[in-house]
Image 1 (tube, rainbow, N blue to C red):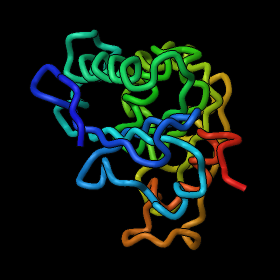
Image 2 (cartoon, rainbow, N blue to C red):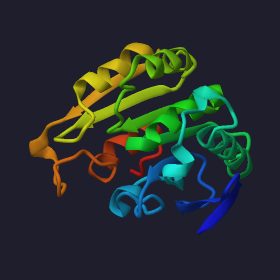
Image 3 (cartoon, one colour):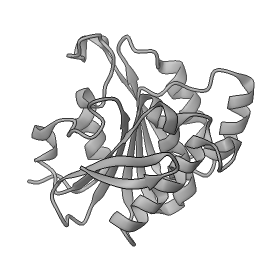
Amino acid sequence: MSRVPWWDGELEYRSFGTPGAPRAVVVLRTGDVSTIDPDVRVTSGFDVRIVAVGLDAPELDDPPAFGGQTPAGLTLEALRGLLEREIPGATVGLVGERSAGQIALHLAAAMGPVVDRLAIVGVESPTDPLSRDLHTPLLDDVVADTLVVVGGAGPAGTHDAEWYSRRIPSARVEVIDAEDLDTLNGHVTLSSVWASVLAHVAPGAQRR
């Protein structure tokens, strides 16, 4: 486990996959599994280095759109520093799951062409008009080829995915049927769709 300085301590992250691989993917998640490989069997089939960053409630408080001094805004700056230190001078894939998805979107917008592939999984769209107004201009700056995954019985549904796909210049939606999900609560998780997500954010890296 490694750590990067943050305003109230440190962000934890872990690297796995293929050390020194030409392709790197940054994964943002929350909870106890945030820095664990989503599916070792899938990851082992790719020549890719994964940097998994664990985020929790304090790091997600107040969206970065409100200003750089919010916890989420400071988290965004810490993540930019992490990318510049761990993956200097390279384009990367970026993944955000559920509540970490908003940070992933903001990071992709801030990094511009450095993030060339983006996937958000089970991410709800903003629920109130103010949040929608704040997020919409930012999404115009996401230049990454974006995959939006929803499905199952989770809180994020097709309407959320379509909201993002209408606003991100290059985005497509993948809806997973509940019958195809082998999860305890029927929610789409990163682990349940890791194969398609990794293929998207690490194109050409699959071992043959």
